[in-house]
Image (spheres, rainbow, N blue to C red):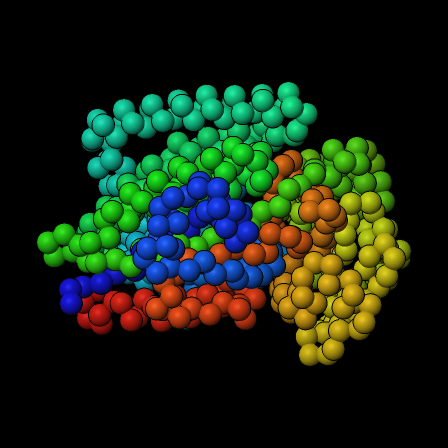
Length: 492
């Protein structure tokens, strides 16, 4: 047997349920071929909370996603806003993470990922804010881009497809508005088109990494997630983007068989989280969350990340930062260097937690007090710890979202992070829609519905069992075992 390799293709934001729907509708014919003809099966797993890409991807790549409380957060120790947006700042705190881990694609190729995962090859152009350069990479962003650009057919195809996608996206935007349905314009103008236009570069880099024989490859594709943010995960346009992604998977799969001294690759296809239909908080209630907080604490400056800043006209007594990731918000008292517990907040700001929990659009608030978790809603106050049994009231409440014991474990883990907010706010989830703290039509990051349930597509012969996976970090040992089985020691 010749050399083997593992290529993992990450389809961002596509839930298990919506993948099955796409297969039933014929939107992803090649993926259906893998299931029907090549022995693959679609498995559901739980990504954990927060249901965001950095958290889920860190778990998959490193087996450790602790202290990544969201897509954006405030690091009190460093005094730094950490995010994976257009001006990523994670590189400033990266030294605090993943120590002693065995990265899934160690010495392999990490393409368009949030983290380099100790890869010998990094390529991050398709997701600009992600990653950071490795020392002396033999295969890099500049090299892949140069090789791609030297072929005039690539430039012609990119120009044609790019213009076509711009026209389609704008046409769909106006159709959506005229039909009375919402659409998030900023994702159409910036993020979504960026991902669609650069999707081809990620595909090209993946094929080139396979041809160069890297033993393990992880490549991430974000077009569906960005489109679903703009139009919603159930929109016809979002499902049409899946045909584009399916074609990419087919073209990558065509290079599975090694050439000359190359490798024969096995493919795994997975997602990191799902999405749900959302309604922006300010659209639903007429005020931004930061505006409401500034009325409760009129001598505090309140800043939303991502959002607005509300500055009092009089003297400022303190600073509050709200970091938003879809239907999840972390509330930080910036001037206090440690994470405040429930009792401390009650002592400093009597009645504040109850006001937050009673705000329309807030499903519940999560706080910590020692090793004890506190959940407050507009009607109740529940306490539980990691070891104790759930009180009946808490069990009944959590059952609205998922299996109570599973959800309690996930919430306890998020609430144990030192970098989580002093208060963690969850947007209300009703009738398959969630209140979102960002301007999105589809979103994720919180709890409720399909955002918690991504998929992994793997061969039945590998005997993956995801029934008990309640966090993406528990996928890591399954994938690592497969990697080690395929990659012959000493030949990688």
